[in-house]
Image (cartoon, rainbow, N blue to C red; front, side, top):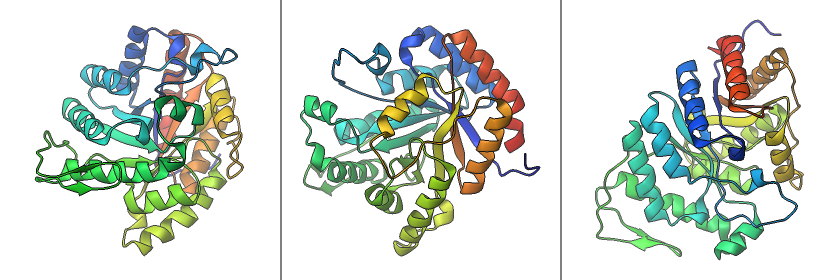
Length: 313
């Protein structure tokens, strides 16, 4: 292991939701807050198909804003990171209001990780045109930014328009809630460069972080933005593989643009891989474990905080 490492923040989520009660999830969020984890991740699906062969873990999803509000009320420092919210699924005026309210409730702890979506079957069930998801995402994000930052919001687009409106409360964080854009490829890179405060791809190798940043940074400069201001987060540190890694593999299996990060089984290996992410340019890594009970996950969160996190402070 290298002796000197860059600073790195760590977060975690409780996936699959079907493995624990909500009370147990709340206890894990409070534990993460006490242990110094940077963020608690809030993944999302809205209306998944009832595929008979799919396990319940792929169908069980809480409403992000509801559980985010509860977790905000029982914690004090840990950030609430949507990981990721599918922008086209939510009308932007309502979503901007919900996020701004959550930011007020949490004292400015909301991080809006977003994606344009990938599950065609879910788009079809929601009645949202899958081929227009990128255009919808970009327009909705611009509209939300306007609602968060302007005293007299005005917006005119193909999917949403408004004028002569008041939009309060404003988020505690200004100018607006940080938007961390997921995805890998020309479209996501352009959205990061023009609209994002950060880049938050789902799960990819350190070398793909380097590859992505080599394209995003010149685009930011082209648009008059400072590449050094970009937050970079990944969710590729999976210790012991398990259900989370299988789910990510299923999602990314058809995407030949990236490769899955290497699997790790020990804290030492995890520290080494986290170091690779830090050297590649990441500021944040979401860590996941193989677990089957809340007590098992709590033990692993405590061990990782004790043995791994100090190496990156």
